[in-house]
Amino acid sequence: MSNRPFTPLPLPPTLDLAPLLPILVQAHEAIARYDEAVIHLPNPRLVRRSFETQEAVRSSSIEGTQATLTDVLELDAADVRGETTRLHGDYREIANYRRAIAHGQELLEKRPLAEVVIKELHCILLDSSRGMHRSPGEFRRHQVHIGPPGATIDEARFIPPEPHKIPELFSDLMKYLHDDSQPDRLIQAAVAHYQFEAIHPFADGNGRVGRIMIPLYLYEKGLTSYPNLYLSEFLEQHRRDYYEALGGVSRGDWHTWIALFLRAVRTQALITKRRVDEIDALYREIHATLPSFQSRYAPSFLDALFMTPIFTRASIFNQAELPSKQLASALVDKFCQAGLIVDAAPHRQRNKTFVFRRLLQIVDA
Image (cartoon, rainbow, N blue to C red; front, side, top):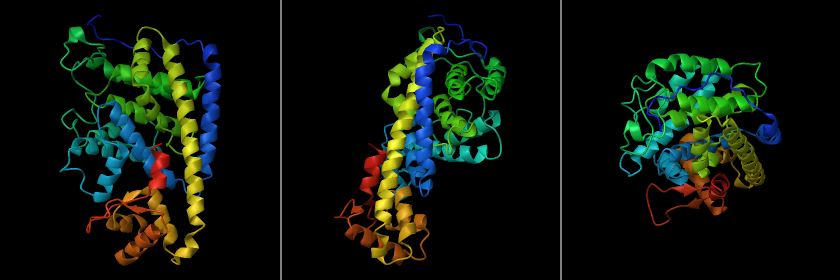
């Protein structure tokens, strides 16, 4: 292939949307059903933490991490940050991704999804991770190329634009992203995701930043009530198609990429709605039994279980904001006796870890 840097075509692209209308309509309908399910939860925070962690695991996996959802939740509970484990680097990256998701929502309460916000998210993503020396929060200043490890620029699959072109290209992308005259927000999101990845504005972390931007954009533009509709599960499962479709746009094929993106939206909206419905049913089922626990703190303990399904006695005490560690320990014992949680290591005498398996089976299905 040519070893010259690629310059993305100007925005907006010329698109024939007619062939995409069926899947576009299906994607919007699926989002609406998903959002209605989330809105009707007794507390949307019940799904937020687990969904954020699952997204962080999936998106980071696309970039090569090996940690699973269970790995991350166990390290959360142990509060050791993974320093002494084989998963230290993975855990830091995933924890940073999760922080960036949560911080992104906070930022959007005050300002639009703009360059300054995206740079701030990038800074969080690369905080003390493998990218700590890759200019976090700053556009790259050097030419890069994308290909197999050790590939020269002549062997590269893709050569992003020269660094001096990034500010103007990025400015054009932001203008397009917030252009209210465009025919459809999902089409804008698909086009913007490709354009961001093609610009490759940062030295590291572009894929993760680009995937974080999708739920934030859907939330900002009112398609979702919370920024919890994540696509990385689908994109990880269809990783080859994902990369090939993005590469096809560089050769003029927008249709394949946009169709894949819309299929990802539809699929993940339907899957996430099913999970939300199952979590809602599980919560209501258990909540109905709480009077038998004879504790006015049982509801807050239950809410904490849904936010941290793997925990220690100490971590659930902090999460549930209970008045004493003795009360937290007593509630752990009662919930174990009721069969709602299990001791993950019954042979261990200290630092026991407990698991809310029914929730994990829903989230990680």
